[in-house]
Image (cartoon, rainbow, N blue to C red; front, side):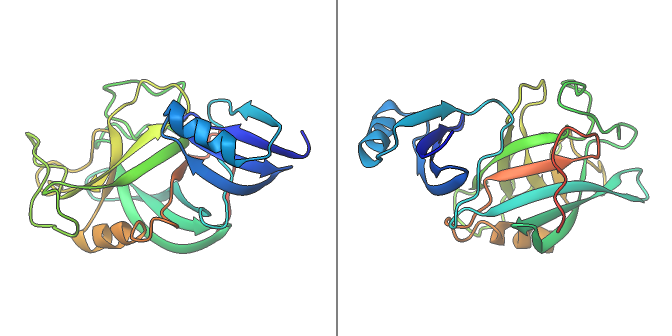
Length: 228
């Protein structure tokens, strides 16, 4: 495919491409009126519907990606320590530790293998990252936690949606708020300290550079390997 064309993704983003180079990105959020507005703004003569799992390109204002990998370390509760890194291109610009899943359920699987209710870590794959949501409804308010029976979510939630069909839902980033009594998560990425949570939230402060893609790589061969 040559010349100028549009690449349309399931999350509602439309990239105007010139060959393999992204020129700009439009946020349609799946709304037809917004899509029509995109078509009126571009000279592109072709379009393509991106297949599930395809990673959107990174424009100059959208070039940061979250990469989640497992380490060879396990904590005293039996949880494998993860590395959550913010990448700009192939360069790591920040990182923090995390966990996922429950102790005793630390099997790392692909999207096809992973089952709902398993309490295992989120599966390997490409994920679309949402925005920072606050329990209190007020930005930078760490004083109120999201309501849940186990008090495990803490004050901040950043949801994720897998780009491939999966049984695993309600996955996101949050503080492992009840680690002392009930360590781990039901499959979310659990951040280990309030200081690291604040660092993570800082990755989203400038919406022009806030990461919109997370690459979860357990070394199972279903995603690309990125070096940073």
